[in-house]
Length: 596
Image 1 (tube, rainbow, N blue to C red):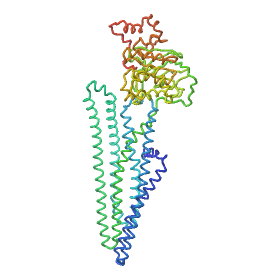
Image 2: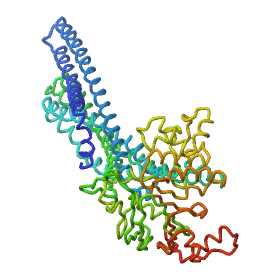
Image 3: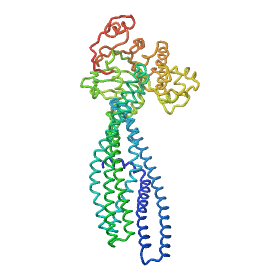
Image 4: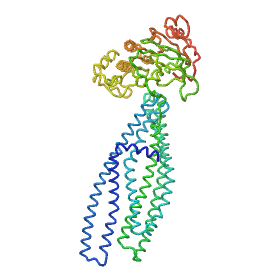
């Protein structure tokens, strides 16, 4: 009931539609109960011995007119019911989807690292669609059938109390069966939604990585994996089908058995003269209405249990809280200079073991300074720069911007001052202009063009038939790696951040393309505090300072010339790259579980 109340809370902004829908349901249901009573009066009048033929025909004509009038009024209220509750359901679902997606965007990076994308999108699609049926259909049916059931029982007691008690004898078994099957059905429905989400996640991964799948000729493997997931969901679905197949016929059998008993007992009362023929017909009609409502309740109960199972998964997402907390009273960034400092920073990833990934990191980057991070894979370079925009918070120590702990700043203010050009550039499936404008949605077309020129991207963009309107495809697959990188640089330029993070921005391109990108990067870094991660040491020779990271620690620091003269780790790395040494590099005591 708690989940149901929470779900119905989404109807509050549309209480007007809800009231109109509920009133329409009530009126339509009440009119439905009036039909048997009108027919009862007609039959009792028509078959009474004291009524003349002319009077019976007149009564028949009045009853026909009344019935048509009632049907017309009921049709109007049925329209109002269907429209208002249908609109209510669509509005609630739209709000629920918007609320869930908006909340997802507030969660930290660690949340998405622990879950598959397909699982999350399944919550936004199939689970919310299941909930929609409950809000837009089950709600109206629940009230309609409740009115029919309660109103019908009241009318039946007025018509013949003894017969009503016989009819109600079938209700307790139906209620017990509903409670038993409903509990089981809810558990099965929740399991079914979970298996569907897992199957969607498998499919999403395979489609997103289709180039890898095809390069390894792994189509049969992915097909088998998806088929196995679908088989599991099919098995859960069949369990649900079997439960409903047992439940519904059992209830219908109980209901119609009761109806048969009512017909037999009512016939005996009519023969004995204690019940008029019209009353018996009306009683049977209303009993059928009541029996139909009881039967409908079984389907509604099953649908409600499925919706509760789906809503539980949705509310689990809404109850998730980001591990990156906003300060209660954030300090304002006024003309930030871009001085970044790490003070005794240590860090471990949640859920990846107890070992520290970073240990006692101390560094200070002055405004406009270029700091390069080098070291073996898994040393912790990417983890260090991920702490700057607060993708994670340090386990110990603190990171400051202009002397202020970044945890005291608004997350949006902090990140507005940080630009990132990653190794694997992600473009969205819109146009080139839309992807560049992502850096500043309010930028003018001239600003976009200027950023593209500065990023050395304008020339190849205008060569496309559609120019800046060229669509890049999902994840930018229609562009080459170098083109994607230059679009990313233009995007960062348009953002105009004070702090820049370049995470191996040229590692996946050829030498000629690297030269173009390096020129664009130099323009991008001008006047900005920059952190550069690079495996190609030629790209960082002119850095103001170079930090050698190994095993989550800073093991060397200095300029290129200083580190070469020192003859340490950096010297070994440099000589290995540029003098063609075949000897393998030392492991440098790298931790196997350290995550870059």
